[in-house]
Image (cartoon, rainbow, N blue to C red; front, side, top):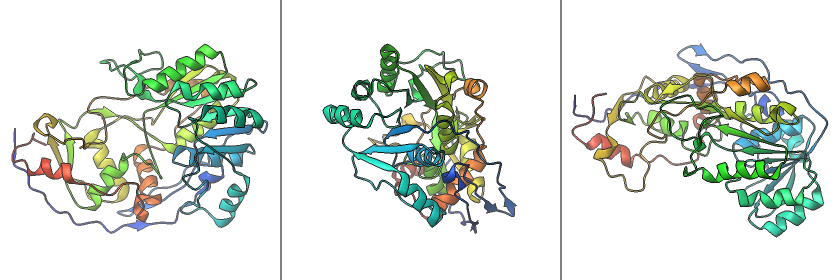
Amino acid sequence: MARSVAVQQQTQPSLSLLPSSFSDFNGTRLHSQVQCKRRVWQTKGALQVSASISKNILIMGGTRFIGVFLSRLLVKEGHQVTLFTRGKAPITQQLPGESDQDYADFSSKILHLKGDRKDFEFVKTSLAAKGFDVVYDINGREAVEVEPILDALPKLEQFIYCSSAGVYLKSDLLPHSEKDAVDPKSRHKGKLETESFLVSRGVNWTSIRPVYIYGPLNYNPVEEWFFHRLKAGRPIPIPNSGIQITQLGHVKDLAKAFIQVLGNEKASQQVFNISGEKYVTFDGLARACAKAAGFPEPEIVHYNPKEFDFGKKKAFPFRDQHFFASIDKAKHVLGWEPEFNLVEGLADSYNLDFGRGTFRKEADFSTDDLILGKSLVLQA
């Protein structure tokens, strides 16, 4: 049934952001507490990662999101870590809640190799001179970008690649498993081709396929998209029925998975899906974001995307379909377990990032206004 929609302003809640310990940056999971209607999210057990022999490790990228957490875990474990970047962003930055001592210790140990990974000759000569044992490729998108790395490091012990669950072919049978058919025409086809290239080279590789990643410092507008609307007291526009099922995995759980494949014989030439334990509907995600951040339950407005012309703007941050993957293989083979449930993870993200007034993108409600301004929408 269609209904008229009017934007209703909501009273913003009173938030109490409690101190947070950035112990994750020292090799354990980051503990946070968010006070929300007298309910306090308690900390869990520390992340224990058994250190292997110290390795000379190169991270392609490493100054944003995944790399920030991964590099700190690796340094804490005693590995020599070098970040390969173009040098446009600071190599290190003190993170909210990170002690001066912890930051100073990390900064004194991290190394930097400045260059453009698409300058293949530079990559070959500079990496060959360093003789890295292990490469974590966090930002690789095309197979051609990996070839000079392998050429430069003939004695490379392991190549660990950040792929994507977006490589799977759309299917009616879910969740996706690592054996499912892949889509050579997907927008992540470059990652799929990279995996095939690694197989063809016969190196010791491991590929991690995250679904949607969230957490502090996220540069993709995943949870941030919801937080902007909740803070503004606006309704949440969600396409179609809102019962589309998706899956999010916390960045710290992902970093932990990257650690657990390092030097692990069971991870040799294997692909692993990594994400959260539970699946969630779009409507459920909106409510989870509100609960995690201490906002009232939001008004959700459903709409038919076919009735609107948004131009090049993206009206919703998720693909409008069921999309989730099984993490059973990682749990059984690696012994990896996600520590964050969804609401805890969203609270962690809010308390340590958006709730402190930091975010990657300014709020843009232009597509929301088109939706909410239309007199007829699908019944919520």
